[in-house]
Amino acid sequence: MQWPLFQGQDHEEVEKQRQEAIMQERGREFIAKMKKPPPPKPWKTLIIGAYLPVFVFVVLLISFTYIGTRAPAFPLFALVCFSLCGMVLVYPRQASPIHARTFFDWFPTLSLALAIVAGAILGSVNHGILEPWLVTQNLHEYNNVLPMSAPGAYIDAGIVRFAEGTKLGTQLGAGLDVAATTYCVAPVVEGNQSAGDVPKPSIGFFAVGTNCCEDNKFTCNDADNSDVRTAIRAVADVFHGNQAGMEERAKFRKAMKKAGEKHSFSVQEHPVMLVWVKDPEGAAKVSLTFASVMVAILTCIASGMTCCCLKVFRLNAAVEGTKESL
Image 1: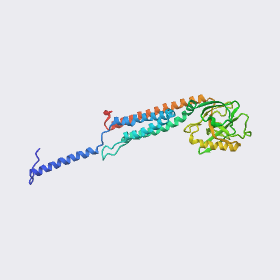
Image 2: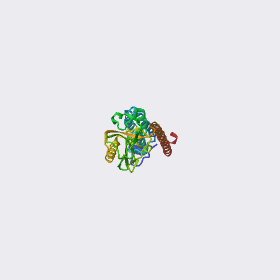
Image 3: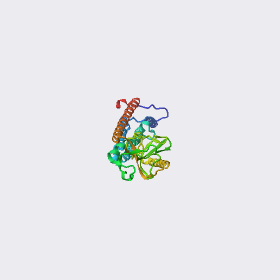
Image 4: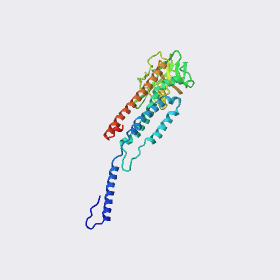
C-alpha cells in the first residue's frame, strides 16, 4: 500500500506517520485485550470448588465421629493438613494486574473453608451422639455396685449395675439454672432412704441430665421407673443431650452441692456422673445407629450441594459462551 504524498511531505515523514498509526492501532488492540477478562476454566473450578470440598468434608466428618476414639491425633492431623495444603492449592491467583478476582475465582477457597469448618464441628457433635456406644464398648462393666461405695473404684466404668435395693433419689436432687439450661442431678441411694432419712456418709454416684427436673423432682431418662438400677457413664467430650462433657462438669458439681446442702448430705470429691437408663446396651445401639444415620444424611446433603454448584457453574459457562468446553 502506497501512502499518498502531500505537498511539503517527503517519504521519510510519511513512513514515520505510518509507523505511528500502526503502533497506535496495536496499542488499542492491546488495551482492548487487557480489558477483556480471561476465559474461564470451568473444569478446574468444578473439580476444586465442588468435588474437593465434599471429599474433605466427608473425611473430616468420619474422622471426628469414628476414628478420633482410636486415634485421637488423626482428626487434628487431617484438619491441619487440609487447612494448610488446601488453602495453598486453591487460593486464587490474579490473572492480570488490572483484572480483579471474581466470585468464581474465590469460590473454591470459600467452599473448601466451609467444608473444613463444617466437617470438624459436625463431626465433633456427632462424636457426642456416639458416646454411649463408645463408653459401653471401651470401658468396663460393673455389677452389684453398692451406692455407698467409693466412686474412685469405678472411675473407668462404662456400665454400672447397682445392687438389689438401690434406687434413684428423684426427690433428693436439685437443678441449677444457667442461662436457658437447667442442670439436673439426683443421687443414687439405698432403697430404704428417703428425703428425710439420708445418711451422713457422702454420696458418690449421681444421675445427671438437662432440662428434666421440675419441682425438685428428677425425671431424666428412665428415672420414673423405680425398677431401674442400671446406668451408662456420662463421659462425653462435648455436652450433647444427657452426656456430661468436661466443660459441663463444673455446672453439674454445683448442682450436686446445691442438692447436698438442701437435703443434708455431702458429695464426694470425684463423683461418678451417670445416665440412668433401663437398657444400657440398647441405648448404646441407638446412639450408634443415630450417629451413622447422621453421617449418611450429611454426606447426602453435601453431595446435593455439589450438584447445585455444578448447575450454577454450567449456567455461568453458558452465559460466558463456553458451554461447549463443559
